Every structure is written in structure tokens, then in C-alpha cells.
Image 1 (cartoon, one colour):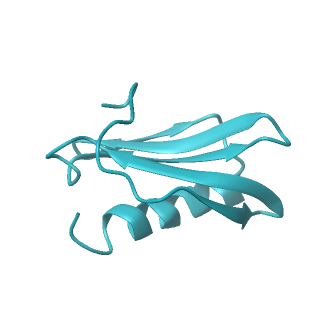
Image 2 (cartoon, rainbow, N blue to C red):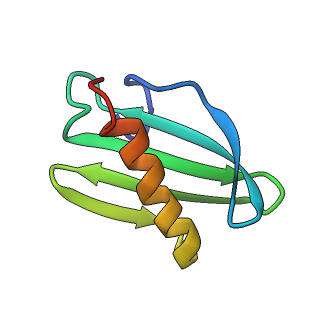
Length: 86
């Protein structure tokens, strides 16, 4: 699921995080959004991807985000995958 990002996914959107422009991409595993999901921030200008992957109770950050970006990834993940049933 993670390599293909072919599970359920909210609409991609642009947003500003820590003063930089990013695209937010979110996806989860088919029939298991509760236990396996991700949020990714992609900056074309910086040519960088940051993310949070959640799998079976364990979170992993991708791309060594700065503390402000890491905190925003956590909030974005909660907003996308914990605020309402998927």
C-alpha cells in the first residue's frame, strides 16, 4: 500500500508549513486505514519530501523534518486519519 499509495486518499491540497509551500498527500491501506496510513508533504521549490507513516501503532518520520514541520505532520495526520471515520 505504501509504495503504490493506492488506498483511500483525501484530495491532495496545497498548504503553507513553517513558512514554506507544500503539497499535502495522504493515503491509507485499503480496508485498514485505522492501522496503516500516511501523510506526506512535498515541496517542489525545496525538492524535498517529509512524511509520517503510521503502521500498527508505530509512527515513523520520513526526511528528517525540522521540529515545526514534524509537529505539523502530526497535526495533519490526526486531522486526516483520526478526526472522522474513513
